Image (cartoon, rainbow, N blue to C red; front, top):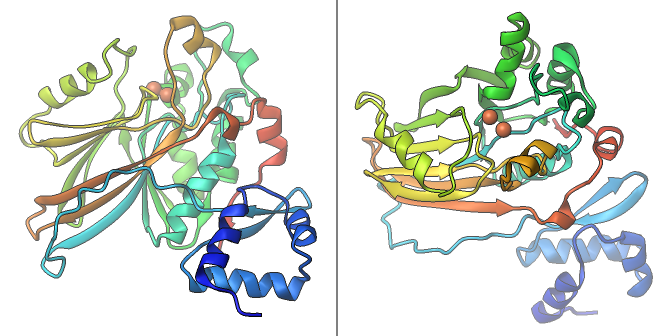
Length: 330
Ligand SMILES: [Fe+2]
Ligand SMILES: [Fe+2]
C-alpha cells in the first residue's frame, strides 16, 4: 500500500506523546513489521517519534515542541559560526518536587539535536537550611552524602555531552554546614560534569563571552528588575555577550545594555517555601541558537523557551525517586 505524505502526517498527528504503542497497533491493525515501516516513513518525511519503555509499557515519545518566534534574517551563514547550546538550572535534587524525568527529556532532545554542551546555572541539589525546620519534610534525600551521591548516580550521562555547571545558594548550604562541596564529589566521579565556580563563572564558547550567574536573596515583584541590576553590576572586564541567570526559577529573555540576558527556569515544581513566600515557579529550560562572527560578536540570537505544563509534572517525588531511571546514552 502506498502512503501519501498527507496520510503519514495525519497518522503522525494522531499519535499523542506518551500514548501506548499497543493501543495504536490495535487501532490501526498493525503488526511489528508494519509499525517499523511506518516509523521509517516518519523518518523519511522528517517526523521524529521514539518508542520508549516506561515501566514495561511501550509508549511513543515525541520531540519537545518548538516555542519560538523566528525572526531569523537572511544570514550568510558561511561566514558566521553557529553555536547551539542547552541551558538548565535549579534541579534541586532531593526535594520531593524535583522533576528528573523532565530533565531527562531535555537532555534527550539536546542529544537528538547534536548539542555537545549543556550549561547548568546552579542549585543542583536542595541542600540543608538549618534555619528552615520544615525543609526535611519536603525532601526524600537528606544531608550531603545522599544528595551528592544522587547527582553522581542519576544525572543524565550521554556520550558526547558535557555539562558545565556552577553551584548555587542551596548547594552552598552544605559548605556552610560542614565545608562540604558538591563539586568535589561530582567532578571526581563524573568526567562529563565540569565545575566552573560557586555562584558565578565567566566562560567562552566559540569566542562568545558568556557569564553564568546564580544570585542570592529573594525574587523581585518585577520579573525584569533584578536581572537588569545584575547586568549593571558586571565589571567591564566581565561584560559578556550573554548573561544566564539561575536561582529565580523564572523564564524570561531580554536585551539590556547590549547584553542578552536569559533567566533560566527550574526542574523543581513549586515548593512549600515558595508557596508561603508568594513566589511563582516555572519548570523548563532553554535552547540557544547563536550565530556569531570570528570576534565573538553575536549577529543572531534565538532563545528557544521550553516550558512544561502542570500535567507534565509528577506530583510526588516518591514517583520520581522510584520510577525514573538515570538517562544513559552511550
Ligand atoms: Fe533554586
Ligand atoms: Fe538559588
